[in-house]
Length: 152
Image (cartoon, rainbow, N blue to C red; front, side, top):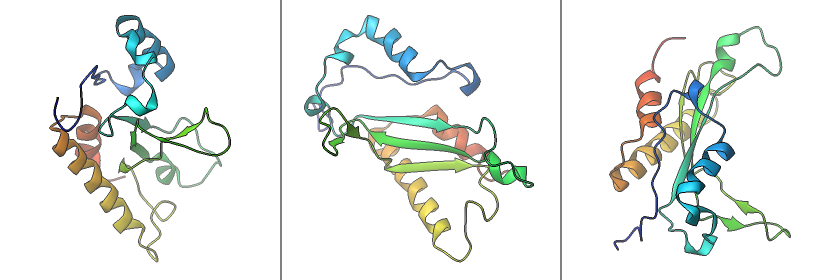
């Protein structure tokens, strides 16, 4: 056992985002082979346990004239050892600690009069540092970073 704790299971999705099943379906599938995934208490989960969620636009709300601004994609990183929030003891907050983006164009997402751009750079650096610290090659991170600076 090292600083990260005991590794019970590690999963890295390699399928195209369009070919992926919903998270609850994947969890049920993995739970058949690794039943301990459903038995772990939040206090037993290492602070180094995490998940990433890729957010792709499905349709635009509201409809806009500049479609390119609304095609932004996000990859958010969340700890699995969350903290309980509110009065409901069943709810756990898993706020993102890092974010990577691509197709993030226009003032809808980055207001030039604020520190939005610096915040995005800081969040991307956090993701990169996290993966480097864990020595983990994350397919989605590499995908997002390779497309990040493509023109709209």
